[in-house]
Length: 417
Image (cartoon, rainbow, N blue to C red; front, top):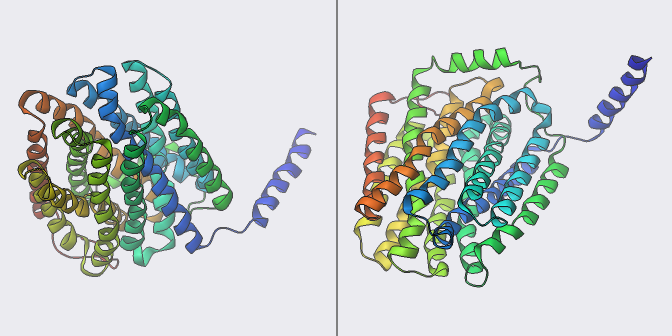
C-alpha cells in the first residue's frame, strides 16, 4: 500500500521536473558568472572589513591572520565533500549553488551580530564552508557545456569573481565611511539570500553528465586514480603555492594600505578596485591564449609577472607607483586560478570534474590556510612589507616547479600533458 502510494508521487515529481527545460548554455554561463561575482563580492568585502575588526576588537596581526586562516581551513575541509556531493547529486546542482550562496550571507549576519573574537572566528569558519560548495558544480557545469573553450569559459567565470572582488572593496570601503563594520555585516544577508533564490529559480533543472549514482567508494577510487596522474599532482602543488601568495596578500594588503600607509577606507577600496578591474580584463584574454597555445605557455609568464607585482607592492613608494604595482599584480592574480582549473580538468574524465574542482580548491586552501597566520607572524616581527617579499619568493618557487614538472605540449584542448 505504501509503495503503491509512493510510486505515483515519485512519478509526478519526475514528470514535473521533465516539464522544466534545462537552462541553455548561454543562460547557464550568464547566471553562473553573475553568481560568482556576488560570491566574491562577499569574500573581498570580508578582507576589507578585517582591519576594522582588528581595530574594534584590539587584535594583533597574528590574531587577525588566524581569522583568515580559520576561513581557509574550513573551506579546505569543506571542498572535498563538496566535490563528492556535486558529482553524486549532479541533478541537484541548482540546490547546491543556492544553498552555498545563502550560507555565506547568514555567516556574515552572524559575524556582525557578535562582539568578541571567538564567535567571529566561528562565523569565518561557516563563511569558508559555504563558499566551498559553489565552485564544484558551477565550474563542472561550464566545463561540460563548453569542452572546446574550457579555458575561456572558466576564465570568464573567474572574471565574474574579479567583478565581485572589484566591487566588494569599493562598496564596503564606502559603507565603512558611514557605518560600523557590524552594521554592514548584519545587512549583508539579504542580497545573498535573494541571489540564492534567483539562482535556484533560473537553474533549477541544471544537470550534470554523471548518472547520479556515484558512491563514496567510487568517489574514493576516483580520487586514488587522480593521485596517480603526475602532471595533475604538479599542477595541484603549484596551485597550493599560489594559494599561499593569495592568502598572504589578500589578508595584509588592506592592512598595509589602511594602517601602515594611513589611507582612508575609500582610498583603500579604490586600490583594490583597480587591481580587480585589471583581472576582469586579463582573465578571458589569458584563457583564450591558453586554449590556443597551451596552458603551460601562459601559466609560466603569468606566475612570474605575479611575483614581480607582489614584490613591487612592498618596494615602491606610496602614490601612483604603488597604484601601478597593485594593478599589475591584480592582472595576474585571478587569471591563475582559472588556468589551474582548466589545466586540471583537461587531465580528467567528465564524471569526476566536480571532484577535480574540489581537489584544486581543497589543496589550494590547505596550502593557503597556513599563509595568513605565518604572514601575521612575519608582519609582527619584521613589518608588513616583509609579507610581500615572502609572497614574491613563493611565486618564484612555483614558477620553478612548473618548469621542472610540466613539459611543453598540449592535449586537444590545449592543456599541457
